[in-house]
Image (cartoon, rainbow, N blue to C red; front, side, top):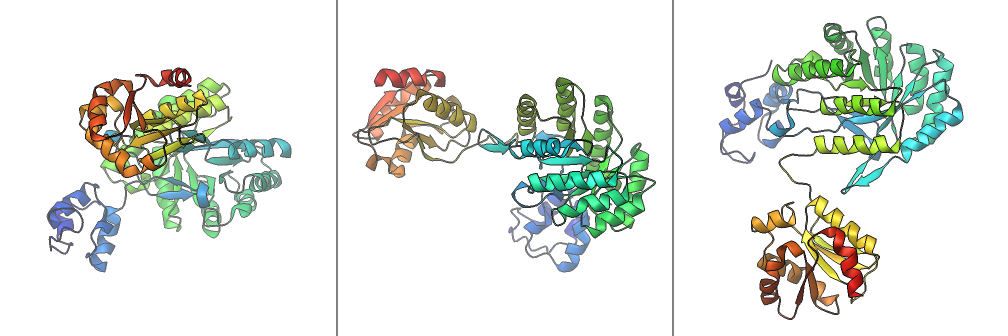
Length: 446
């Protein structure tokens, strides 16, 4: 049962030291009660209070890690129902299904595709996160062989073992010991045996239920058997069922702190048609799935789903930004052009991309504007002549260029005179208004 702010306050030091970032202990207690702060922000809380408050302040959706190393996938830990309330924390994982009825070469080929699926989009690395190995044959030996093929070809990729046979699960999970795999397929008939396999291999247990009522019973029983890390499947397969079930699960966990449903959700989007599959997967991305299982790895579909996931799981209150610095595009010499723009990620990648397209080695000065685009930053007073001049001076770029010329975006041409006054000895050139005109602009200067 969640504690109220006053109940939490009684367990805090009551020193009003402000170390937690709040003006008083009562204010911090209220933040804890609303799940807008974490207990570790208070350095002076007693061990006794930690024990009592630990469960109360824990995220309503249990945090779970699938896989290990650089490709480990974090799931759960969500605290809000709507992303604009705060933000969604851990992006859902995409898993490609590999059936053990495929040949070894086919399995290895899909595993290699997963390894090579990574793309760079506005500075973030996006990829297929996991492989689900399905015991479609019903043969434990074939599942084990498929698992070994995946382990050999994609050793760093997170894995889900999909079988309702505890003996098959035991054999197939061994190549992934120490890599936090998920063993999916526990149900009312095999829960005890599947839980034992998950415990012995320190794996997450995936529970498959017919409906939410059965799911609650199974998660409580699994917890009683000593398995804490669970992934839950409410049995929804159609898009409308996924929306309904996932929403009810999330509401129960977030609004009611209902522990039997406070776990990451796995959704199955496999369809014969790629477009149909992409649409169903989109429902899972938007409506609270932590794992979305796909049947194919088409590049067009990956890009569409990666982009949607990236949009859903960015912080709506914080623009995407890149680091403030001077970026070399190509191998610029001392007489190479020097552009300047803001650090809004989309602006940076569009401008840098057009400079690359021009084949003219250049420098791009990216100035911190708190992630705002050029016109918005100018209007907000964050991309002004004095700030631009200060940035260029502090960067030390003057020592690297032969001709002191700075090319500013055409939309802020009004700043050219003021910048020249702030940067004595520099020539300020007004560049194109739109980034797609940069290649032509550079070629006419050659």
